[in-house]
Amino acid sequence: MDKRLQHQGQRLRIAVGFAWQSILTNRRRIALAVAGVAIGIAAVTSMLVIGDSVTAQATRALDQLGADVVTISVPPPGADPSGQSAEPLSEAAQARLDATTDAAVAALRHMPEVQSVARLERRFGCGDGPETALGSPDIVAANPDLPGVLSLRLQHGRFLSPLDARQPWIVLGADVAAELRKTRLDVQPGAALPLCGKTFFLAGVLAPYIGDDLLQSIRMNHAVFVSYASLRRLTGPPSPSASLLLTRLQTGVTAPDMPGLLASRLRTMLSQTVEASGARQVSELRQQQVSLYTRFLAVLGCVALLVGSLGITNVMLASVSERKTEIGLRMALGAHTTDVVAQFLTESVLICLLGAALGLALGIVGAGVALTVAQIGITLDITTPLCSAVLALLCGLAAGAYPAANAARLDPVTLLQGRG
Image (cartoon, rainbow, N blue to C red; front, side, top):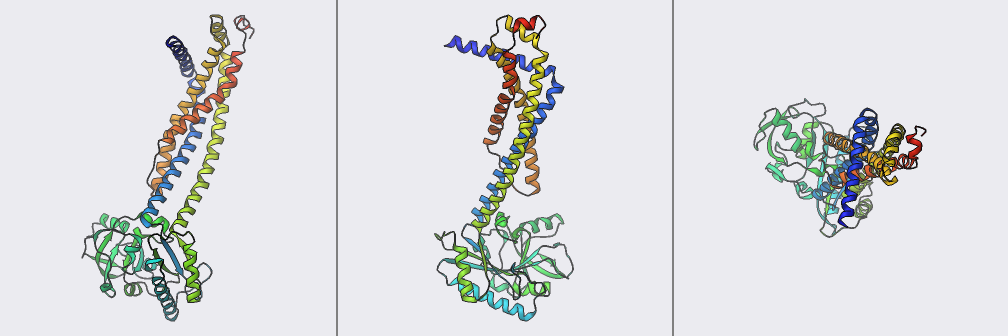
């Protein structure tokens, strides 16, 4: 048994030696075949890395936000089906929207499935007001329940309290605070900060929040939080967008149709159009979109691998044609047909493994760049290089099978006579 293993190992070393020598001799021609495989492996690798990273990001976001958070939208009077109004709201229309929203909040708080409710009102930038060192963040009015509903954490200071209803206090999102630090402005609690031509005092700074991906149109990291009175004073005419209610369900309430149930109850109570969506629904939708994207990349990768494999087949057929004398000499000296087959299969597999190594590196780097631009953390699973290696091995065997079989069928006598 040991002698047989030693013999097989020796044959493998000889096959690898012949294959490597051939690759070095024809490196320019083989470089094109390697490039074809590398492109396919890079596409497959980037597909796996991006898919894993986005899925992991969505999972982390869902863990932080919580699957039991429901976003409810109350559209303003005269809004279109999307919840938007073409014109800024009049004071009367805003008063009606406020009354409807307050009624919705009260109704939700009396529902047994609901633990807490936070109301949000958002503006984009300062409107017609002057820009300041804060740039043009989302200006969000929120009640003190928001941190509890979204599990927000604070880096410094505190969140807004009921006592701040008419006071010039603000809370900064993590990205806004980071930008301010670059300008060397003081972002410690109590610091005076300019916003839309007025001076506010910093109450606190939120820790980075990854649940933004599951909150429709709300960017907690890029927001400045103020009281409702301050929001109206800062931004002038009310925005025509809908009021948003964030609702956290009671522990143990996990029915997937709960958003629809809450919306249906509110429509009945308020005689008003209300839309609702759950964090889990948004997460599943995002993952479906990523799945479609990764499947598209998989198709491209498979096509590239097919083209690369055909290129390797052509290279190997040319190699067989050029090395007929060598093949005939080996067979005349006692090499079996299996040795000839192993020689060319090994060469094909080595070419594919070289392409896989290059493609794996390119795919990881490319995916890393794309994920960095998208501000998504990279997640690299051990199965990614394993999949690349297995694909390369299969491609090498498939691409080298026909040329190897052709080489094994050659007659050594005919080859040595120069008639092959």
